Length: 531
Image (cartoon, rainbow, N blue to C red):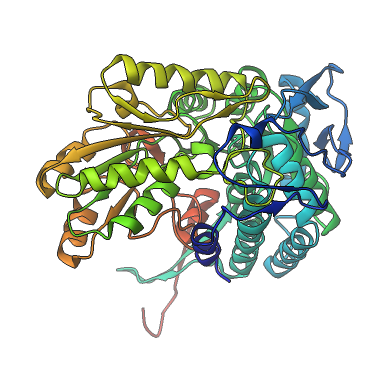
């Protein structure tokens, strides 16, 4: 089953039936109720074995000996203490990656051998889905079903996609106007520094590491301090698959210390960052001030979801709900501005409100739960401030807007109507379960309003008219337009943004260019038979 089909299946099947916690027999009625989030949380059975830094093929303590706690967002309790890397540890990791690139076997290995290691890694991901998905849910709060049934298959598929590319990266012979043989050669760029976010820790690990390794680079990756556990486990599997020491190094730590040290390091040849636009600006500046290393950025978004007058309202409601609330609303491409044509606005609003009220919220380890907690207290408070701002600015709070329980970071699915473009909830990236519904009259108006933002990551278009779809897809200034679907993330589909949503592309063939240098080689031809 394709990744797109898995998401569609996950979206379409009923999540309101009774479910069980993965691995145990307890049942819970899955409907929107505070009881689901107030029950005693399930205790995962796996042991957290990897909490140290991974440098030069070994798990080691930080140079300072310091650790930091990583928390369970269901309760706020500590899961484990993780080694806290800083500038000295980044230096150690970069030195290992530098030596592995300049002297080690990885870039000198045949592309076919690199591909075999990546294929073995993908097989190991499939074999360890339960452990990886459990760590992801425990550390992040996303539903276990989402992690295990959607994200992990997408991850192994993406690794296989880039494993297949490893021995198919080649240059050209170029015709010249003089008797010269001209070749272009694609070479790995060197040491790649990569900084990944907390909302999709494993998926972003794969998006970054897969193409970088396929091209023959070595990597230093900094995990988000909120979610360090799953990347360490995945890195262990990569070495089990045969990755040589020093090729992949993982440093857990904080942005101002470890992240800044990676961005400014003079021996890092390329930088990739996924996160907020504000932090992306800092990363780009630090890279420019150091050795002018090239940077790819996948940043924030405020994506429009446009429901046209000819739409099937029931399907549009369900798709718009998914586009916004998936992953607790913690998606950079979330359809967070729901534009609805005035002729179907009232019907859409009532059904969107009813759908939000049916959303199952609770312990993400419970089968059938659609929404777990937000990542941490900081993100929780930020979302609650935006909800208060929406009320104060005159938007109508249709449902939700409150905390669930007094432990953990659960928020009721929230729907606002009568939203205007000048309100913060319509302008800023909330990154939470808050749907803003806006009314529009015609296509030209909604194009203008949808494009009036500093972001340009994605958009959704819901219409049965091919001409309307074609007009909107070409007019919207975004990197991805989903027509009558949303959040389709095939390994081959490029993903990235216009404007302040970033630069460069993840996934697909386009991502390979991020990790390659192009060299022209020119050789004179003496008495050529032809040129």
